[in-house]
Length: 366
Image 1 (cartoon, rainbow, N blue to C red):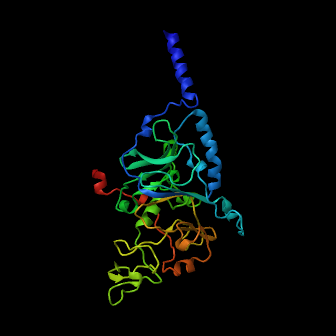
Image 2 (image 1 turned 120 degrees about the vertical axis):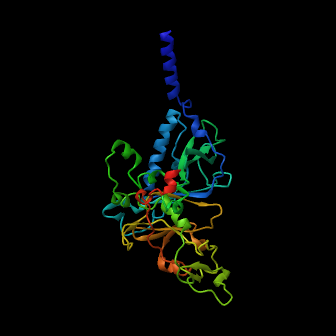
Image 3 (image 1 turned 45 degrees about the vertical axis):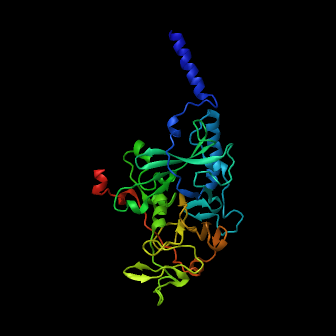
């Protein structure tokens, strides 16, 4: 009887390592019946070339094991590298930040409301996006091949934080966060486990992944701003603004938003929208030293197109949804680019580490 038990154990072990027969948790395929909210997700990194190089190696290990869980999606989508083939004065971004301009890149993945991946991809079967519970306040966003049934390869894209504690929690949620956000706002989870006395050092974050992440993206999506150029003016005698826009209250005054006649943007409840998402990590308040780090961002189906811009070293860039039919690339003169549209100049936005998210009494009672 003991011999038979040993044979059974060995058979199960062999089954676990055979390609195509990996024993995995069915809970990964426990999808929630909830609409997918993002019309696109953008994945950005100052070292995207290395991510693209690593992804096939990681996926090959998964393939050999027959493990369908958590493959790297970066292998199967084309990336954009704005600096490749472009003349620039220095290979390094900064002497104390040894990253090449050429390595900067990003991928944009478009979805329909049913969760189908619309962007061209090279997976064996078509991809769709599904969601599965991670905790009471988090949902994983997983791309899965085929009909999304058990055993189809899964690619983790990010996770939704639908609630964060503190008085500012509503300002920065919902946030769609990626792997680099673990460690951006406090000590990384693995370090908390293996090095419980480790202190969080924001300087290390600034010089690497950056202090712009999923929380800062969510904040800018909701951010009311002061305006410049055509905006900030009082309405005309009929109470209207140039371009037919409704005025809004700002600091107790009825004024016009900073939008031009051809703009597709609409004022939010406060009377304004931020006309772009600025993904810059500002190393100082004056913006003398900047870069674009690692993060993921998104826009919803009801959100108007909004340019994604940022300053990487010496260059302002437009990454996605550039205005007036412009293609992604270098913005030659950011003041002229913003001013001709009546938009304000970019400036540093708040950073939201865990230390700023003190639970309120309502949070503690839940």
